[in-house]
Each structure stands twice: as structure tokens, then as C-alpha cells.
Length: 387
Length: 85
Image (cartoon, rainbow over all chains, first blue to last red; front, side, top):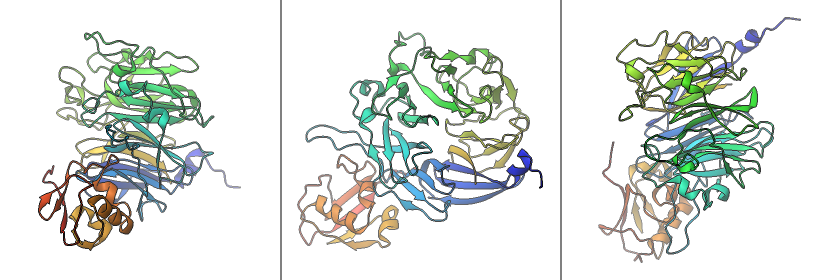
């Protein structure tokens, strides 16, 4: 019998990068060598596509959250990996307010997460302004989850629609515990990190240890003042989560309830502000961030115009700069929270997309980087999948 | 009555002018939704408000109320606002 190595088995796979932009979506594919990429697109040209995600449970269904500058938000669904698309019959929408009261409206669906492996066709969606929705039919119809959307305790934490990111307040980082479909997390910008043990019926803040912007007297115990940018669970250890926050990089080990600021170990000249967070699928001590300038007026660009990814391989005790192949100066990149990801090959491939429309890739866990696409619109999200 | 459809919504109707009926603007929009599923939510939000960058004109006059009564001879234009970028 022919012996198949881990790397050998990977060679039979195709890597797909799902790139969502302000003006449409593109799908890049490559053999497992990841040396040459083919492009397919644009899909939904002119639509703001905030997130496009492959259903890992069937390997062919794609959901894409989209809107245009004029038209309201919707979700498109493809069951043939992007050859054809059909619009959701009932996209995420808040409940209609009683007569005489003002109700919220979904500006856009921002985040898509497939539910537990035991719940085929079920998905969660996070919206702007903050809302949580669930579909049980593969994204055709969506229902609001009252445990968040009608939660009077949470409502003040949402802030107003003037608060949150420059692109509106968002519910993001919806995480499903692979061991328990009832155990969920999400983050809100702003509004903190929250956890549910009953599939979203009730929620508790998980913000202890997270810092808030200093100097304004903000109450660190109030979720309203917390801005988690991206939260990720380690696939190899679901009790460990990493978080890139407005106020630093954190790690938490459950059942502990306190986040530890591991970004203190980053070089002072770089800082620990950024948006994306990527965890290694096979190592709970390895994760990557893409630091951005959070000083002064918050340029949100690579510090000093010198872009780099930083990796820790010991759970955040130390960090190493990874910038080989990137410009050495005058590169003022911004990488959004959904725009950096990893594939699951060995060695791991890493990818990020910039708001300037470039996609960068590394085939060796960040050791060397190459630009694989230019001239795309402002990139919102990059997801990697093996198909 | 005849309804003028703006280019961003022609992916639903496949034509620039369509026929739709209703005693009110809300009923007309429901008829459009019946004929072209999904079209209503792209221009009217879940609180029954016309979306910020969409406009509806009845006989050349802008209208925001879905309760506005319609006559069979009214001409309806759905327009995208001049708000590019």
C-alpha cells in the first residue's frame, strides 16, 4: 500500500480564498502547493459583501452577506460553490416595533458562522447594528434571537448607531463550541464579549481582565466600554480563546473567567492594537496578529508605514515579527478584523487582505510573504477553505 | 398601474416597467413582492420605512407613507437617490 504523508494527503486538496470587498466578492483557488492562484469573480459586482463563508459541513454551500449603497441588506446562498446564487427568502431583520415605537433596522449582516457540526444547515449571523440571527434552513430564512435582540439589559451596551466602528456598531466573532452546540460566544464593537450555555437564550458578559480606554473614567465592569475587535477559539483546545481588542491582545483559558493581556509583550514601538486575530488550527500556543497604529487620532494603519504580522508560539509570552516579502517602508496598510485567516494545510498557509485591495499570502506560517492579488476593491474579509 | 423600476432592482424584475396593483402604496409594494420575491426588503426596511437612499414618487411627488392611497391611473417611480461613492 502506498504510504501517504500528511503533506501528501494535503496535495489532493484545493485551497479557496473567499475575498469579500466593498464592491463585490472574488474566489481565488490554488493547488495545495499554493504557488499559483486562479481567480473567479466578481460575484455581486457593486455590492458591499461583508462576509462570504463556506459551509464546512458539506464543502460546497456558500453564504454571502451583501447590500449595496442604495439597497437593503440580504444574504445570498450558493449550493454549487458560487456557480449560481439565490437570495434568502427572509434575510436577517429585526422584529417590527409596536405602533408608535421606533424599531431598529439591520444596516448590514456583518458576520456569518455555521452552527455546530450536528446541526446541518443551521447558521448564525451577526449584524450592524448589533443583532444575532439564526437560520435553520441553510440561510434561506432567518429569525431574530430575542436573547440578544430584545435583551433590555444588553440594549444600553449596544450604544447608539452613532457609536461603534466607523462603519457602524457590529456583532461579530460568533463562536460555537465544537464540544457543545449550546455553548456560544460573541463579541460586540462596542459592547464586550458574551457567553451563552443555552444556545443563545441567555448570555453573560465575559469581560473580566479586559481593559478600557484610560483617562475618561470609564467603568471597566460595564460592557458598554469594551471593544473586542476579534475573538477566536483554538480548534485544538476549545478552552483557550485569543482576542484582539481595541485595548490590546488577550488570552483566556476556560473555565477561568479572566482575560490576560498578552499584548504587553509586543514591542513598544509597535504596540498591541489591531483588528484581526488568527489561531493555529493545531497548536493552542500559536496565533498571529496584524498590528495597527492606535495612537493619536487612530490612523489604523501599519505602525510607521512598515507592515508586519506578529506571531507568538508560546501563548503570548513572546512575539516575533514576520515581514519578509512585505514593503519595508511607506506602506500604510489597514487589515480589517475578518480579513486575515489561515488554511489548515501543513505547513499552514496564512492570508490577509488590505483595504487597498491587495491579498497577501504565506505558505510557511508567516516566514515569507507574497502578494497574490492587487487592484481589488477595499477588502472586508478573507476566509480560507479546503475544497 | 405602471411602476418604473430603478436599475439596482432590475435583477428582480428583468424589466424597467412592471404592472402592480394596490389601493395603497403598501399594498402595491406587497404586490411587487408577490411577483418579485425579495424586492420589497431591498427598498423598505423592517420598520416599514423607505430606505435612506431609495425614493418613491407618485405622479412626480415624493412619498414616504406606505398608507398613501393610490388611484388606478397613478404613475409610480421607484428611484435610487443620488448618493454615490
